[in-house]
Image 1 (cartoon, rainbow over the protein chains, first blue to last red):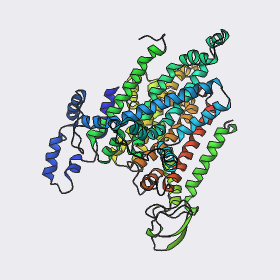
Image 2 (image 1 turned 90 degrees about the vertical axis):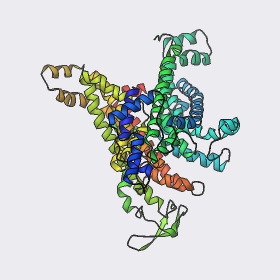
Image 3 (image 1 turned 45 degrees about the vertical axis):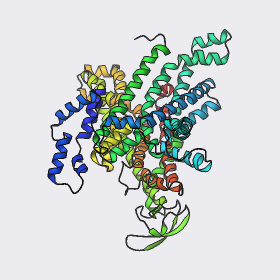
Image 4 (image 1 turned 180 degrees about the vertical axis):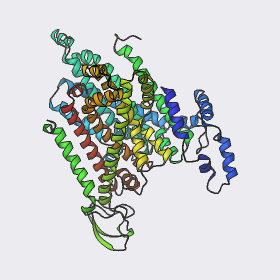
Length: 299
Length: 285
């Protein structure tokens, strides 16, 4: 699967009408200078040869050198990793902590006002674009209430509290669509579990309602919930690109946009490959976690 | 039937209003959305000002949604932006559906194609949609057709998977077996017998794809990699307005509200269609 991604990414970005060598050389460059830059970048070789060389390097962890930033793409990604990773981790944390209880309660009171409100919120969450929500929150929370900074990022090394203070609003912004997604699936799968015979048995033997919901219904609904958390990582990555732009966070998402605007192909390739790798890896880990979530599953 | 469903009524009506707004934009008190006037820069919503036409006439104009830092009328830009958003959304959805239907039928009915085709689709699905769209736009330079294609490409695998799953179950139906026994050509079985039975779920999926396409177009424009800035789209208006967001939030809010309402309307319509046309799917989600 990653090979398909690699071929796709490579072809997509190499079959391009824009000539990066000409862009790098600038307007005043002569044809000879452009040629030498092109040879230096290996752009004069046949496409399949370029792909072979590139794939070999990628497999050994070398993503090439950025046309624009003039440093190794792998180093560049390393530099930008912390903000993105922190944002994604905090978002997932908020989303899971908020959405699963909401979903369980909605399923428990199926058809009630809470359930209907949550489903309404969920459709809204899918519909409101991340950047519109971001500006709405900046307007209300940062500008009117003054609780959080409007933009910017503090490194973890600068202290945990400023770090969290700058990160919390972007994370809340990004978590809304994720909450909508997870809450919806949690509700559906808990609802299904609640219809099973073992729930009646559990209630019949006098377990408390909370224990029935958590130990019996939620535990049996864990696999689809884990799956949707994994699928949601794709939405999360897309959201990171937008959120980092709005909140001026110097992460991988911001890097992606900068690289596209500068037509910096090695960086675009590197970032897309990296994001896809993370997505596949997360989903693999989630597949493996089924063993713990559902003892019936064996690999 | 379908129109008895409240979600269909609400979503459909809202969408119809938006379509009407898009079509009748020139007659709704708008000016040319690309006209600018230095004297009318950064007006608050509702303020009156003047705007000069290309012929040199100076028009008295009320800036219902204010103006941007070039003195362009946000109200006109937002209304004309409706055209772009709806056009891109519908065109991308149709394109993704067309490719998805052909590929999905092929994978679902022609057995040897299934494996290789679906592996490629899995590979594309492993790349987040926004990244594919950004990469395609970077590749071809942004214009209306390239943005439509760029948005449609990441949607194709989703439609393909749906059609393939449907084709796999429909191909076992007795009427397909009968057609095979009669010696009906493969193409006719795929498009004449299997395709018509996938229409209802496809319609539902199509509305979701449309909503997502509208969203994606706005995101691309907003990031500055979408349609060129001279085309008024909601994303472009917001991208230009964001610099002055603290002082003049109206540049971001009005297109933002239109965008959110449009996507919401399409999604509600989709939910309604799903509940009425495809009760099996409604139970699953």
